[in-house]
Length: 193
Image (cartoon, rainbow, N blue to C red):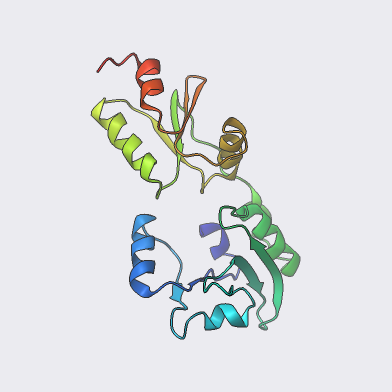
């Protein structure tokens, strides 16, 4: 979200879920840094106005970029399991604000953290939480890479996991372990339990 802050951009989440559900979701994500609005009552009215409320009562996953005058300049409706890269959104913002001095530097990807034991994960993934606990119990130092923060890490995980975004995924001195596979982790760390 920090990459959007200097670009005259406000990120706003809208969901047809009720407030307690959104609070639980935000907590499961480890907190969020943008406003999140409940479109629960009257159910889905905002989603309906933007044309993304389905007959079943839930909304499509969509991104809208609205310019300063209130005109929708970009729409992306995508599968619930797919999330566009921030780079793509920043490029769309650049089309709207071509003279923005910050945009080129914002498009630069941060370098990936390095280490002998890397765990590619997300803040909200239940198996990632289990893996963190397991690694701590076995006193194994590792470097954690959040695939939501590093788009290149997300793409690497997809290559290793046959096109799927599976977390956690481990790179342990060049050996790739997809998912929280305890037998494989025990084997690579020579742990006998």
